[in-house]
Image 1 (cartoon, rainbow, N blue to C red):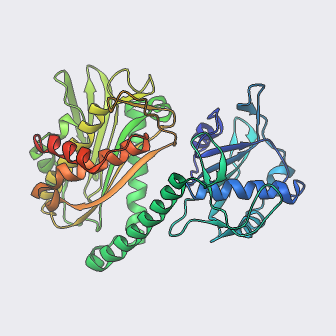
Image 2: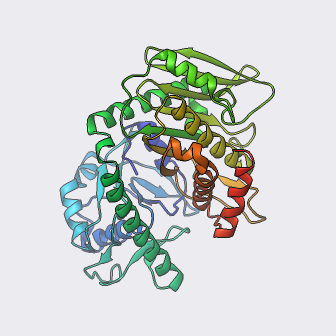
Image 3: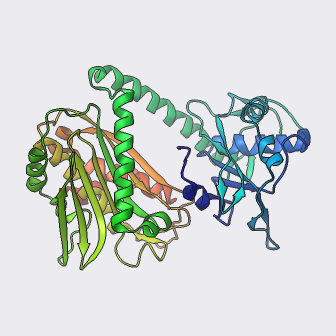
Length: 422
């Protein structure tokens, strides 16, 4: 989870209109006058969010007559300033072990001041309540956030099982990072290179908004893929990029992420990249950009009618994932960098409330703001036959964010389908 500095991003959160597993709303209040019980209530929400998937506590929005958080009142200067990061952080830390990691942000949206507590998910061990406070908190309890927006004690076996699995997953990921750090010690991206990559990602996102449509990419779900090498390239020319772009097959970059017989791609060079805008008729629907330093970016609207209807078809999502992963493997191999480790991030922004259709007869709805799945592979691995396995696991993990689960047999079946084409 990242703290956004873009006011429009905060507007989407503040004007969400309903509480969910990642967002809790509070009416305007003063931290200094709400008392011990009031502060303990914030601690309960913070612990629950951190033990689930992280999230936001928005202060300055009251409930309407139906109990929905739609009255955007905002906060006075005194109320907003009372939420001092050090004071709030120390208070919340006194109720949780280990302490919950938070940020306090004060966005101004439509001329109104708000306070947002950004709560980060636990990294290693889940947070246990370490202090009692009347009916709000009980020591020794693990609080979790439920899909119906309650911050409650985990008492069911299934709830505790999920919490344990999150902790085990985090431990595995931490061990994996340690092992990758040893195996790729001489290939790790330093902080300066990371900053450059992040700056270029933001530039590509801005270009995508300009070409595809700002409203479309701020309001509706879309497919985004970012691939960063663990070390910046230093010997790639624009000519090299163009040759690699033109040589990619299965599918060609001009067909990403959905091949369409009536589509065309307008490609052009910048001072440090090759960029392509995918059009159906005269309407731009996708953009990809590849940089001399190795960064690969792609963004695309879902096929006509899906994004606007707040639904995504599983077959289109699976095609986008598989075709993009295949293209990455080919592209970096063609640049003679088959052995470099790649950070592959697949995202579906604006996913809260969006349904995924075609998995089963049940309704599968996402309840988080942005879906993101990250994998690490080398281009050589992908070209060596790992595309179906990598794409299948990324697709399955995205579906899990839409509350659709797959067992090993189902993933194996997805992998088999992908292997026929890639």
